[in-house]
Length: 269
Image 1 (cartoon, rainbow, N blue to C red):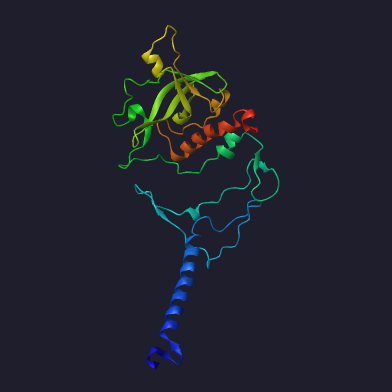
Image 2: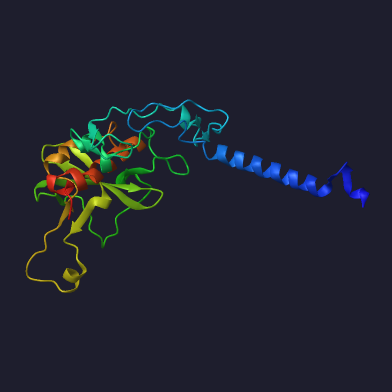
């Protein structure tokens, strides 16, 4: 029986228990550090003050190798967001809603918020621009039986015709329409996400049972009003849309569903 002891009364069972206990504590400590790789150090939501960096409990910085020779991206090395936003909190407490004080859609507040993405185009697997006008795509075309859309009038949320569809932007990776290029009555050209556009005049019933009345063909974009089309973020380079510009445009139209009219931001009940 004495052969089971290692030193004195310290036996193999106690050694196994201590090794397991030490391993478990180290595992918990390791997992806790790994869970604090991004988003740390924390900052106060009201004041924006950043807590002291704790090297003991915070994990190492996470780095990402970017494709197409664009180097390494380290999120923690990017400047933190400015807490001085054009809005005031409904009450002074963490988690209190922010009430916009200016143009919420242009300022990127609430559902109109956007990420500060990279200012270069999204690319395909072979390094070509992913979202381009259909004429610049790799042999993508609109099916003959589908509405061609170019030339269709565009009607805004307030029922006003703001211009016509002048081009179609497609995704060369997913083979789908991403944006409609709208030429406004004033001559300015803006992009509108296809997801907020409803195409009228191409119903299946009208194709099967033609009626004597002509069905109007137009594109309805109910996200924003006619006047707000002038404020759609413009592209810096014609024929090219960057990731940052995509987020700005998507956020502008998305925010319109809450801020385009005063009624939309009111409670339903």
